[in-house]
Image 1 (tube, rainbow, N blue to C red):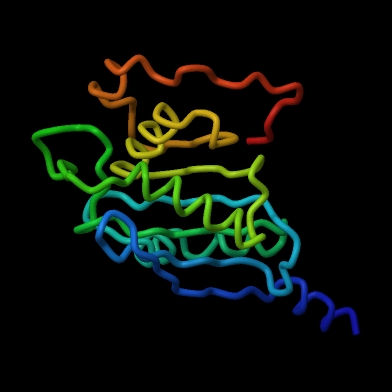
Image 2 (image 1 turned 90 degrees about the vertical axis):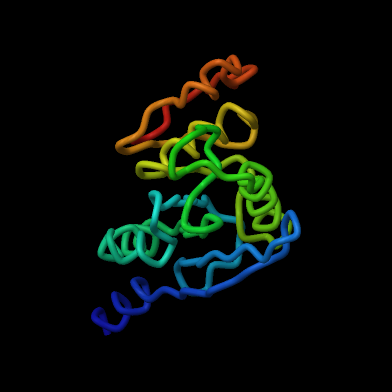
Length: 177
């Protein structure tokens, strides 16, 4: 009986989804614990340049999925246009005209409206080009994201020159790392 309870608690779903944004079909993979009915925290994981959401999920060996299942949050693995994010840098492989900040905002709003996401607990994480994108999104829409994390990325020059986030909301409690 205990083994069945453990299996039920660790079971999760993975749903490939898409919607139109900026004249393009934008795709993402939504992963989370089965039976997730109430709005939950959401981690949006952004792949590096040359990758996609499925590759990032595989690269992480689905460990983020397992953590989400155990802790009760959702993970979203979106795809950048042409395997890159428009993170504000120019003259490199990440140079793009896609409205990725608008896409991430629309994705977050869609998850909130669908009752899947808690609007106060939306998080962005990214690696490399995805990390630069997380910084850019945080600066462009600082009130949207509870926190961001970036691996192998810094604040891009254009994003830094824009003045950064207008105001970072102060928290009354510390956020777990």
